[in-house]
Image 1 (spheres, rainbow, N blue to C red):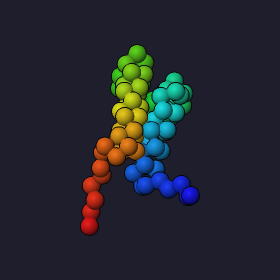
Image 2: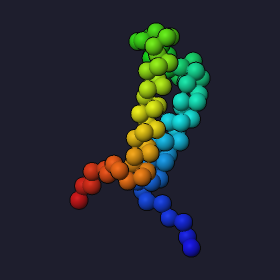
Image 3: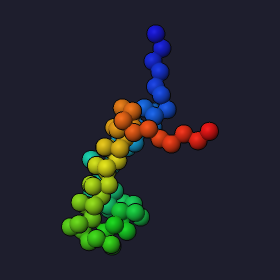
Length: 77
């Protein structure tokens, strides 16, 4: 029996995994990327880490909801 993922499950799972990886590597992200440096400039070192964590948590929640089918993307026909 072949294993088949829908497009929503694949995209949602990918968003979830990448956001989880980002949450685990949050310090690295702030130190080594231009976007991380920009967050540090805008919010300062104390708040930038929490803003970044919030962004990744939202990504995890969105990815999980998309993968489980609770969020349906707009279908253009």
